[in-house]
Image 1 (cartoon, rainbow, N blue to C red):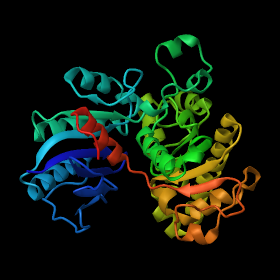
Image 2 (image 1 turned 60 degrees about the vertical axis):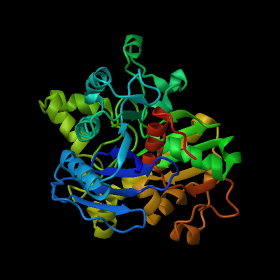
Image 3 (image 1 turned 180 degrees about the vertical axis):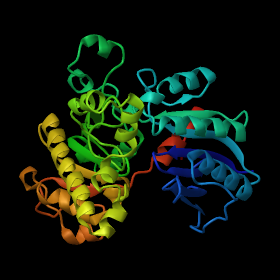
Length: 392
């Protein structure tokens, strides 16, 4: 009988899944549902890369996608003994700085954090509940995106508002921590000398952020109290003057629910492109003025934030791209790097066209790389450790 560890990673418009054996990093099943909603599609593959047949289901919601994943696992691995299920949970607040076994008390705390990550936290919790129902008595392990960033210096952890808010937990939490944890581990394996220096990791996807990592530790993140801050994203606004929100409240008479809808679901690439798309692939293919202005702004904000990250560390030794856009968009990578010569960045256009691991030229003072992130493996390793099995 095969022992399995299931990793579930719910994004704002996607659900990634991987099923791992008791030992090793080669998954028995991988895949994802993407563009969850009216255009949702799911592909799951076995260890050979062959697509698996899927049970009937509904991809209009995360809950429906989860049901299809669980049904596929049970259909294709009938003898599987599920040892644990690991879950990406976007917000762990102040309490959770490492993976935990989910209990009713933990779930109650996680639900209290839903307003701070409304695009993700409800889906994360729904995934936990669905896995509990599908695999009774199997430990559910929550792994937190915020944990990687806890312990940042006070000046990068606070806002310039009355200190009582900081004491109440209003802080810069940072997100995408599971991705940064994996990328940091891979960079330590591939180029350990770089991990002793100053690294900026750009996680660019439908959710996008950047992290300054000095000697292996997160010292600053573009995201803050919520997953709205920093870079523009698929449908999220990124950095915004708080005065705009006051304008919406006072002049337009919008309520908080309406403003939340705009900032989380109608902004970012989608809003900038006039509703054309929140997907970079669609925008690049469109080649229209609306698409160009969205891409232009995205590139500009990445360049601007990169300068800020380098300033925090007093320089930069390496820039690492990851995430759906960072790993796959040659054009976006090229455009971001074009104006970074002042910080020693020079990419080799041939390497960039091939999406090589190292993109920088031999003349570049700053190393530029792509590391394909693997949050599901981080989750599975945490699930193994929670039940006392170490990876080989």
